[in-house]
Length: 375
Image (cartoon, rainbow, N blue to C red):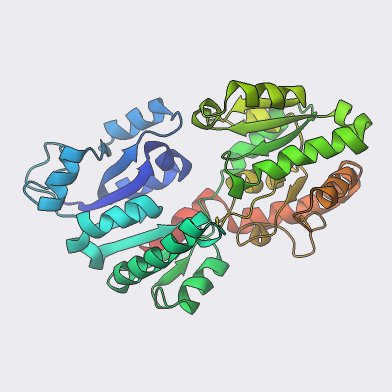
């Protein structure tokens, strides 16, 4: 007889569950019946791993309009999974803005056992656009209603936690901080020892949106071509982004990027295939995000990072790290890139310190432990 309690994990994409670590879901499956609810598929996922989880009893369900109506009306709360008797979740964990907003309608009855996970505050909280300023006010008001009656709110860095408390969005006793989603350092070390590194690209690995700094990256390339042509000829630039974002770029824009020596590549399940050829990874974001997974993995591997100092990045690098971006001015960023390309000894010196920090705080096991203690 199955005496496990029920837990619903609700995210924006199916891919998010892979990003947030299948290891976490497997761990939860030891003590819960796990139901993974999502809005859309997202980028390509490891279907073999998902099928393995399904065989262990983990359920995955897309939130179609039909399923949403069933959930909201409570006519037959079984997620369309033929689970009888009707499912009553003992815990609900909701990730990212979209599902958090929907959960206010779908899981309002279960708000006292709900945990909200904020990977980052998102562009709504940092964008200067008028529409986002307006949405921010609405979102803050909605968050206050939801968070006032929930079990806990999880952030991935202390800056976000402090912001939620200062803005009175949530009470400090409910806010928990976990060290990101973690990385498998054992697996990465095996890849490092077996990989053949040939660093020849300056990389940008993110969504193609202004808040992620894509325009800064393009102007960085233009500056190199104009003022440092020998460096521009030595290193091509590479944009690694979801295929869905590449599909949105016009053919003329693609031709223009190609004329600058900027290569477009789709993000893949195993970014290590890109890491082995990365000379520098540029992370020029002003996004209100948490801990950048790219920055975390690259820092651990030892790839030089030229990145914005924000809520997440300042947690995973030494406080005196030399190559936090000093200005939005592309001329200054260009000078920093030129310096970073000449400073290999610096990264050889600080890499042990960075690896020790990540191994002590940002491993998958540490994240699972912290997550389980927070829900």
